[in-house]
Image (cartoon, rainbow, N blue to C red):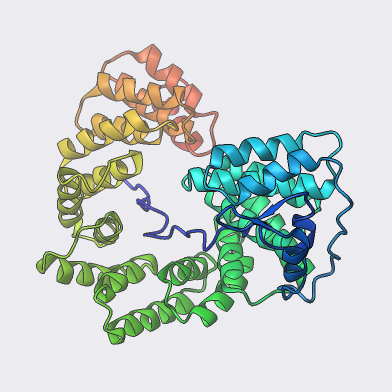
Length: 450
């Protein structure tokens, strides 16, 4: 049986963190502080004009921006604006959100005031929870799209918005805002911008675009962030540029070894695994394992995936997965059980494969592991179970439906459940699909039912 070995995790340890939160305009630009009362960062009253004049002297961070900072009209909502200014200098996120909503929903608030209110609400939600970006994204988009902030805050927030969208896997939207940032500011060499654009394009499988961004990011970063190299190597591989992937893997591994970094050996392991240099990755894993230095999920994944691709080394993959599960490091999902099942199967342990694929099938929604389970059950003469698994695969919408019908036909044959009518029916269904048509017609002819 030929089955494709599926990578347990697309990347090992590639989460990109937000580099910073967008700075609020409180204590900042003149358009932020046109209020009846102003306050210092610790909540003390201060002369508004003095603070605004100081803010006006702030250096423009985006001198080449095509956008002109909008003028702030005289406020018509002094009371609500004062409350927002004071709340923005405080520490209570809930109070700031309420103050921001009051401005945002006020019919007399200007576009500038609404933009700042949305910005402050986004900051407040980030302050409350930095692991959930749904609310910050909602209000950051509103602030940016309203267009009432000064350029420094507007573009800083736009960049953070792109990062948050990447973190939430909303890659198309992320690209839209990140490319807009580049186009409007003229900024093209910011590391954070490059790696987030590269990440978004990579996740969208737009590998040429990803490579263009990630190569620039890698040149600036010089390998300090392994995530950049990992994505770049995989993008090279998926673009048919294995030589470039191998070159980069060796470069990063050598750099890590020479750095004196205590985590260098682990970095080498992850780099080689993601470059699909599985023999080198396996050797790196063994060296770390011998020293008792395998502890993270990324390291376990790199080890078992690498060994699962090395012919005759499936037993080692099985050992690594089972140890990781036993230690609670690996939280088994359908992908993990698929690799475990394949490793058992290719090592000649049908019972192990049945057990692993059975668990994986229960977690899988697409029916692929049900189909694998059906096939191995049939090979073990468990025909009723094989038929049931194949039928379940079909009910889940498995891609190769013809293969499922062939397995059912085999289970119904005289060698199995001995139901000729059911066998013929299954073969006729199999004949409807390109992947199984030839085999189904051959069996129908042999059965005298063509």
